[in-house]
Amino acid sequence: MKITYIGHSGFLVELGQTVLLFDYYQGEIPPVSEEKELYVFASHSHGDHFAQEVFALAEGHAKVHYVLSHDIGKRHVPESICDRTVFLEPGLTWEDGPITVETLKSTDEGVAFLVWAEGEVIYHAGDLNYWLWEGETEEWNRKMEEDFKRFIEPLRGKEIDVAFIPLDPRQENHYNLGLDYFLDLTEAKKIYPMHCWEEYSIIDRWLSEHPDSPYRDRIVKICGRGEEFEQEPSKG
Ligand SMILES: [Zn+2]
Image 1 (cartoon, rainbow, N blue to C red):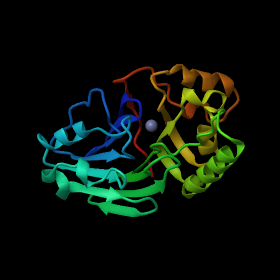
Image 2: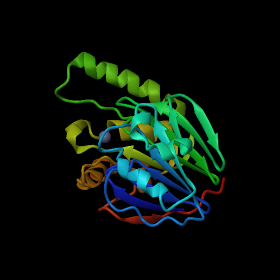
Image 3: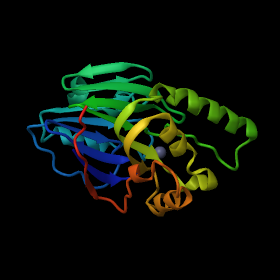
């Protein structure tokens, strides 16, 4: 399995017969073989998670499918592509050919995706995160904590091969809450921090502040756009 970091929350996951593109909004998409099924995911409509440019991929590629969060809406999708587009609400399971997708409700807009493909389990959080902010009221932050823990609960104990999880420096001293909760909740093998606003030193900060964490070697250190990672295929 090859994983390319495209930028922000954008990743390309290449499997034997299937390719998954998540939350592209800018940067370079590596060439995708026309022999492979390409699934393009967008977790919500915000400008840093979705861009119309993804529909250009359908021009040179017959096997493209679009898996969009319900909040994106039909008006954004070119008419010629509507028949290969699905809009997913949170809390459902959708199957198509080689993949199965489960959606979770986000604490921001839209959904998070849990995807089964070719024996791999891949989780992309979108903006489902523990968005605790210093400037918010206690009440707002309490509600956030409640929502986050409730929305992410379906992942409890799940074995996940690849997880894309927000690690956002704008949250200052609360940057690690969502990631730490996720690590304890699930059995995730490799975690790719995202939504870092190009401040990849936030990953080093997490590592230096968690010297004894049993999860340290599961955290992938991303240094910049276009970086590629090879991950051993899952055995189960
Ligand atoms: Zn975002």
